[in-house]
Length: 188
Image (tube, rainbow, N blue to C red; front, side, top):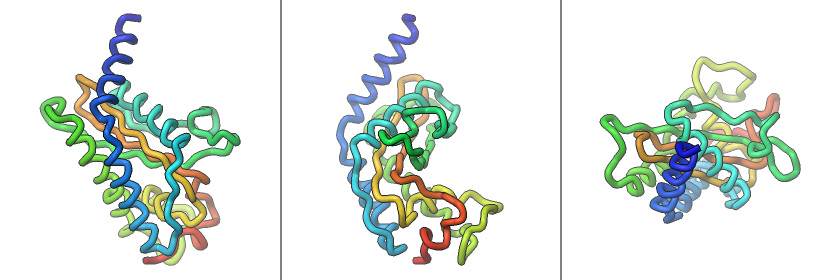
């Protein structure tokens, strides 16, 4: 129990040091810039989605190293208040040699870099339309520019003793739904 309390305290402490939300605005601007390139309306920021993203980012930081998506079928945290599943992108960055001395600045840099990493997957997208299989990861890119997705929220997870930063984006409505790629992922 003491370890759980300590881990919770450390997560809360790191969360407070990462309390400046400017990285969220930068990430939102970057994603919306890419969406504009693909004729998608800008995302609206949603605090409910942000809380769900933050919960999952904290969980990933607590696990330190195990990066995986939350089960949208069974976890209420991965569902909208209406019960619909949410889309999700995760970005992971680690530091060699331990935790950074300025976690806030390093974490914010990783958060804004997430959009660029997700967008780089465009090079692997099988234009004109994704039909269900690819030799490369494209789903971060496609979720980001998905026409039918209107809202987003972000979370950033880190903790002492773990050299990793986890950026989680939650999207509503979810994207990456077959066979809807042709009408939702438009060329730049």
